[in-house]
Image: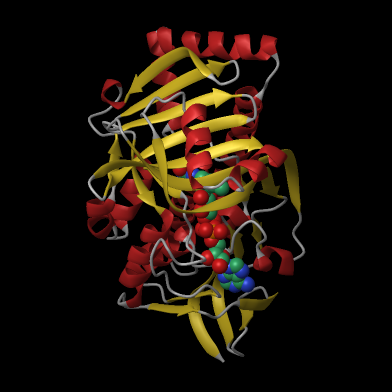
Length: 396
Ligand SMILES: Cc1cc2nc3c(=O)[nH]c(=O)nc-3n(C[C@H](O)[C@H](O)[C@H](O)COP(=O)(O)OP(=O)(O)OC[C@H]3O[C@@H](n4cnc5c(N)ncnc54)[C@H](O)[C@@H]3O)c2cc1C
């Protein structure tokens, strides 16, 4: 029987970050994931989403000693431009820009492709003392006792840990193994995630365009083959999304350019495309005996407002703070209670706000569209309100 202070199921970005931060505190960490090590963006299983890491996420990466490796790949986001559109094809109706410089010396965040972030993190953890990284091996089952969790992996390994962390995604096998249910809202929407080059430089401006069906978001990336590039998340009603995804190269690019109102000129897709169902989901409990549940295992939100993974990294920071406050036993009841108290309300509030925001952004009803346009003007044009919303969006 092997022993570790902490076992983490899931080496996504949240699980890997948790492993790095906990190892820095001298805890031994075993982390397992059935996915193989990350290769490149063209690998069939590559996560083609990108994440706009907000300021608190960067602070956590710095604390984990990971930011130096990520920084050269990151694109700073200085401005958020919101465009409310109407008509078919969509035409810009209300345009407002939010400047990071108004509330801080730092940008709103830094955008990185997910596959690249995971690659940098796994390479760093492979040489981090105290971390046993098992890619290609899955969590299989868990049995908890007052003083320990007993875990079994698919390669037959049996492991005893004082704390088990579920960071194994929206279908979390560890959460399911404990019999903890979820509350799920489906919108009948899907999100297409892909990257594009474009004619007009992005100038570090992230652009969100609202239209019937959902948001179309362009987030700056480094140049690709000498051309300006951005990551795109395009939310649509499910059937429309599948139809769009099936379009051939030129037709797809034309549809995407039209949907973007041509704000960055002609868009040309680079590489593949992934389709994600859009849901809001929260776990019914985020702690159990010797177990903490975090990231998408605890909460899934529509991909709008850059909240999903950033909320996940807030979970990691909160769990680490709870462990720091009671040194000696990372899975003690007091640690888990403190983590649950700290996170439950924030997760509930963020999930509700993003749910409301998504419903507002996707509506095709004329009165709701008018309300959305008026709301955007109101939030932007009243300076204290504008600053408060920007600060809240960053996690404040
Ligand atoms: C289109 C789109 C765009 C997004 N953009 C943003 C953004 O800009 N900003 C933001 O903050 N968030 C964003 N999000 C949300 C963000 O991408 C997710 O919250 C995040 O990727 C989830 O990370 P995770 O580590 O929780 O889960 P995952 O990345 O799903 O990782 C879970 C891991 O668990 C592993 N696993 C599964 N089964 C097992 C098992 N049995 N044993 C061990 N491991 C297992 C999986 O292989 C996987 O590696 C976006 C989401 C979507 C859909």
